[in-house]
Image 1 (tube, rainbow, N blue to C red):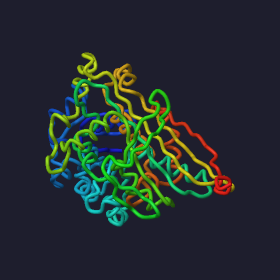
Image 2 (image 1 turned 60 degrees about the vertical axis):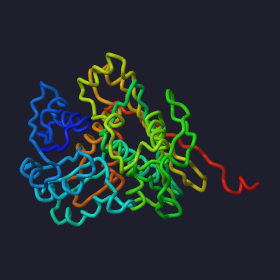
Image 3 (image 1 turned 180 degrees about the vertical axis):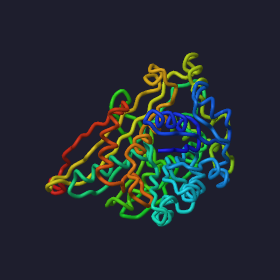
Length: 387
């Protein structure tokens, strides 16, 4: 395919390079061409066009002749880039939602009929979390006969001597100041920022940590496609603890905007390597767990998936300078591209893709050094608890 990637930061640059290795013809667009070149590396031959993602015609001019438009920029540009893809008659893929039009439903879904009319597919929220987490919840519901509820639990931790953005600072800030949403009693609710604290145990080497309600996009699509009574998402780790501390101190609000010293620009690979060599950045970890409660053959059951990703140290040992979140998101997004069902039309989150596509993506994660494990834990029946 001919693929145009908009947004050449920590994730977009790695994703573009992975797609080249898959045999695609790839070029990129970014508002800051020089900075984008630093992310791709001096030896990269990928073309970079100067693109203003706020201007649809800027995107259309740079993306002419593409078969697929990938939105690796902040979600604030989702609707502009969706319209650009429609104008280009291109397929579309993005990594997360903005949720400003409706806090309980991904804005990309509004474009379903328009993509059908163009006979093109848009795969949305196609990264690690959301993305892989959606696939695991859907797979868990297929294992069970009936499903009661599901939960997403994430761990993000950075061991550094100062603030280091392991993700787009705009995305991190938006998630930090947005009220989390959850689904309970088949209804959507807004939660308290950093509320509903819970102790949760991740597999070694992480162990038990406190997780808090978070603004995660899984909640804005899954209830529309999977039968659930409840769903929530929580995050733990020192990254979220730092944000929680700033929030409690009144240093984190939409009115104050992004403060650079708290949300610095994403480090380029060379800058990341310097931080790592100087030990200003020692390590970073990212992990995801998904739990689905239901029953099978009359037996209450908890299906638990754990996804482990390479740490910053492990990634650096391979000669790659990328944060664990960017690494995981880029690799999973590349698998969504590899298995994209281009004969379909419309807008689809991961859980709404055909079963064979979802299973193929999950099977291919092994080739990306992503460890996914499954546990099926029997639960007590209600009658037994009452006795």
